[in-house]
Image (cartoon, rainbow, N blue to C red; front, side, top):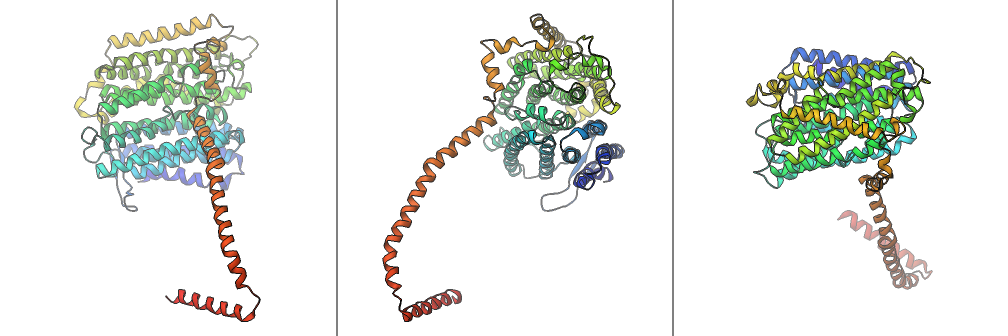
Length: 606
């Protein structure tokens, strides 16, 4: 119980008390690190208590049901590591936020709610923490100041809409399952409940996918990366939000439902579209933080595809990729924030050579690149191979081929960014930065490069949560070399080859792939995407605006005409009668008053 309090309750209480210390800049900047340290202490206490189940009555169906096993401990380890790195980075970075108190409160609320989502087994309690995290996300974006408010509102609307869908799905799920506890009893077999089961699954899937950044709920992410503090983006959209969305998606597909062909097909469609929808914009994007945000969306497609296979290999690969992705993406965003401060800009053309001039940041980014490109010995290498294995297991050759193309283009994007940061520029002198701003990027980059080792040590946790029926299979895969290993090597060669070919036609690394904007094939689509014309949210706003204009111009005015006619007609009929009554005779007025009093008394006494 003490561990639960330190991991969940204390960060949330601290978030509520931020207002009391908002005028003390030093204490405010230190608070995230202090709370993160306490969370690490809670994790160490939980480590000694695992496995553990805590259940107690609260209010009606809201039972405080928490579980702690090997898989949840692994998730908590990553969550606490991200909290600790965020706390270190915040020591200097909080002061640069337009609204530092709001940023700190949002970070602390995110820390507590993320731990709550990981540990709870009650879907109703999970929803409470889920919505707390959405509120934290809104605050973290809004802490960027007035220019971030529109994006914060957009993220809130998209998140709220997807959460509404998930709540509807969970309502149906609870009726079908007869329990609010995830994993209690047999999961809902969609094939045996073809209408209600599929309906509930799709709605919950959309909610979980939206939290991870799945198409079409992703459009706020690159905009948020540009306007919110790097501290907030690295902690929330880049890491914790991915962990919450994908880990719940795993629970959905393995413990809550038994998938049928239709459910898998729906997931595969979203997986492929998500993997491809941002690749071309990322290739030509001139803003580093937007590039990193766009490339945070595409890997979600790989994770969803792995989950959709329902095979141990695919699901294990998705979970490993989730943790690897969160690690390297956080490292990159911490580095991007520090580099932006150093250069005074987040444009790639202004950041050329800064990775070489600031070696700790440059090497941190380079190590994170190993994880982003899924090169061995990172966990991403094994994760993608396992996802491909799962796809082959279910004979999804078309999806596999499409994901291979997406993987090649992803490597090309990251190769471009790495080349920009390590470009030789003699005029850029070596620079020193505060340790608190370079250490998180370097440590997380190193962790991303070592995720393969971490996962090999944590293999029992994966095998236990994925099912004892295939116990030992995952361990054997670590040393297995087969055709998919060759496919992975081919992806690296093609990805680097695509970048090098495009680089030869560009004046600098930052301008690589710029010709795609002028191409008659890709140019129109890229320009429309840059203008927001393909943004589902913006399209929805225009539709709503059109509908309201039509309603105002025609329906509302028609109502006004009808009401005005009724009033005029009533006046024409009642006017002469009322005028005849008001004849100026005192006795008549007294009689009307008495009649009115009698009528009121009759109504009161009845």
